Amino acid sequence: KHVTLLSPSESYNLYPYPVNHPMDNFAMADLEDPDWERFPALRHARAMETTLSPGEVLWLPRFYWHVVRQLDHGEDNLSLNFWVGDKGHTQVLQRLNSSLASGQLEATRQSDSACTNESKLNGSDVHVESDLDFACVRLPDDYGEALTWLHTSRMVELVARKLCGDDWAQGGRFLNAMARGDDTNWPVASAIKQTAKRLRSEMAMALGGAANVGKLLRLLSRDGRLYPGLAPKIEGPWVGSEPGADYQVTPPEELEQMLLEASHEATPGEGRLILPTHMHR
Image (cartoon, rainbow, N blue to C red; front, side, top):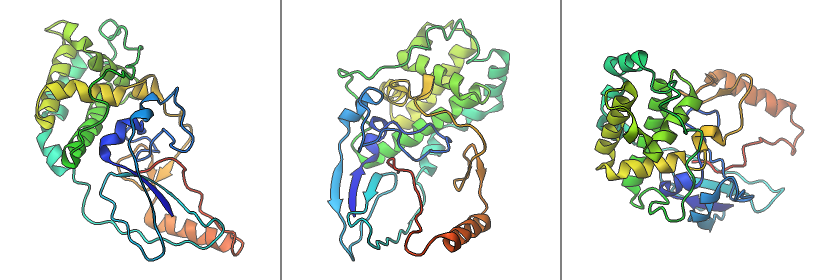
């Protein structure tokens, strides 16, 4: 099997699907068929490649992006995967103060919605472009720091959505505005200004300084990733196995029964599981 690996530091050069999207954990950019116009930052991505031979083992650190392709097409090819340890986000969640979801913040949102006030979000339809002169084109190279940035960014996406009444589009506009620094011009006493200020403060605590907040905001919102949005629109019900996402989680026993029935219906030697072709982490 041919394996392509990219570290967590490359996450936003690959344009991951929004948090809790049915394709969360996959990248929208396709290394095998790159769309440079939609995903220009993909040009910055750095990858490693290797070939796995029979009997070999690949240790894949958590949150590494990977694409695996079978080389001997048409031949039997079996892999066994084992997961060890947790996702490593507990410390990050502890550093992100729980006040982000506190009753005080909820009262702020109800008194003056940060994301439905069109006058304060004026111009937020203009998305954040990739900038070749932008000093930060990826998350930190250090593995531990990259995970901290990645977990923080995912929490920020969720928080922005909650602040905007579970509206992903408005949450994306809110983060676009913060990424451009529009919040510095919002009225000091307004709820939207105070909300953005607190969010920046929490991010700075997790990232080790205010200078990194703007970098991360630009990375996670670049090229309209969140708004107007690069992910295809999802219609109809979805099921999946990842708890916490915006779809119904398939009970394990139901999934097992589905696979069993599929194996019985498949013609011997022709049964195939069709999986997404995009990069996965």
